[in-house]
Image (cartoon, rainbow, N blue to C red; front, side, top):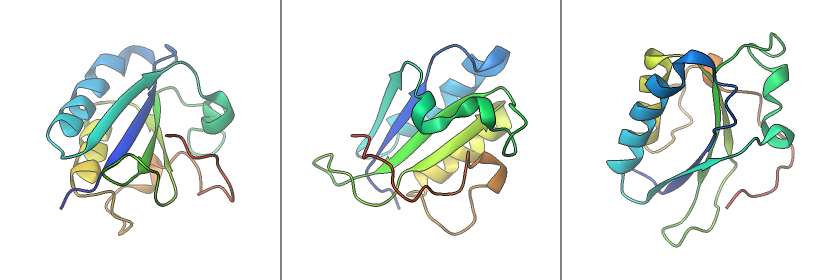
Length: 126
């Protein structure tokens, strides 16, 4: 069951050598999902704090992203999920499957791929 979402992906170049192998499964998930949108942006350090992550402070390199559930007319609904580091094809496949399943909060997205616990307040991203 798909659910509308916006996937905001940081393309600042900090994702290391796995960047291309990670982006293609994410692009494919967005292309094959009704009402999925992919936005590639510059650094969102203020939202992702990617230099502090990895399992919460290791500074692991990889692609970082934010998945924002939204309505079909692109209005945010629900809390965004910060993702990363997505370090290779297996991580990208897990995130892609989670996106296609409608961003469920049922444990199907491995905890290691959640960049941080949900914030108390984050500005809506779309």
